[in-house]
Length: 461
Ligand SMILES: [Fe+2]
Ligand SMILES: [Fe+2]
Image (cartoon, rainbow, N blue to C red; front, side):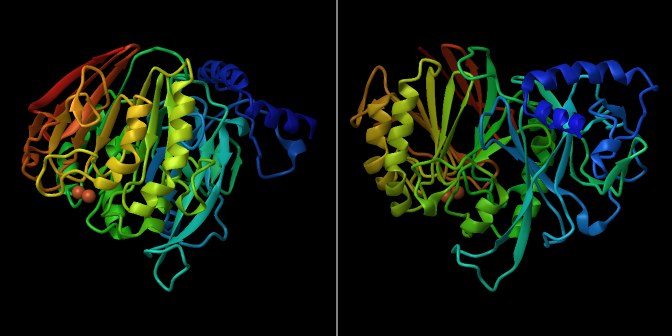
């Protein structure tokens, strides 16, 4: 019992995990330590937290109802020491299923999982949540679905981990009993807040029925060095679960390797279904009706903010939280850059939708007051970058507004207005790669097939 308590205490300490990583790697080479670890049984029968080699069973899926689908990752808390893993199963009952993630440092683990070690300290359990396909939060008489959510905590910053998500009944004699587990997934934790180490990310939005083109490009996109992805809404045509299943399947090469942080677009017709897919930060100060609609996290020296621009009431509700978040970020010496994302563009010269009054009225004054460096949006299916823009005029230094809204949705024509520095037709598709390197940020917009550079721009602090 005492030993078991030590294991639990150990789990909460990143330094302990670090030690364990080294132990893991060392143990891979030896076959002597094959003692069973019975995590479900009497604690006194465990052999402690010594990792043991795992024999991969012929199949990692023993029950079709428990088949693991749509594995993806977000951050709900400190991105450098946690990551949230989510998935769905065909079965939509909470009974008889405990969501579990078996994880470990990537060092010493093989891609096929055969060399991943098992120890109680390297597993985490979570909970399931049933959500409904409805336009309101009122429990409806409509189809219900399930998301399983497990947050891994106590991780080491800027470190590669591997994991398998799903469930199992027991672990005996070095093997899982009744495992229903995903393929091996990868994740790298964030660079700790305040460090100025370089990192890359991808920003995009508006796929809306473009899953065929996503599939054509996904393997190539997955190879692009990116710590994580930001997605500016309009994932699907209407956002019914069937479309989400298709979207997650198309995005699998990307989502099996890196977190994706989303904001809601107007084509997420069913908010409970949208927020049911993604576990996001619950920010104090965001109204109860808008939990997860507005969030922020810090990666190295950059503060990222996601906002829900879909309705006037939503935009207004987030003003107080946005101001407090921006104020705190600007006062934080660890944070050099602030980047905000939302679906509807403050400034757009595209004739399909154009600029968004509610964003200009309620949020732009805050973007200007707190010198938000970059504001990314979608909605208009083209590419546009503004001049540094403040009080409706071109300035030397000021917020820059980017529309990157054609991640394989049908393109819209581009326009030009007083704020437009450059724009490109959306029929080429687009996504943005960003390199953050301390006091310098460079972002480059590419056509959807990656063959054409639409724009490249550098900011220097
Ligand atoms: Fe759109
Ligand atoms: Fe839209």
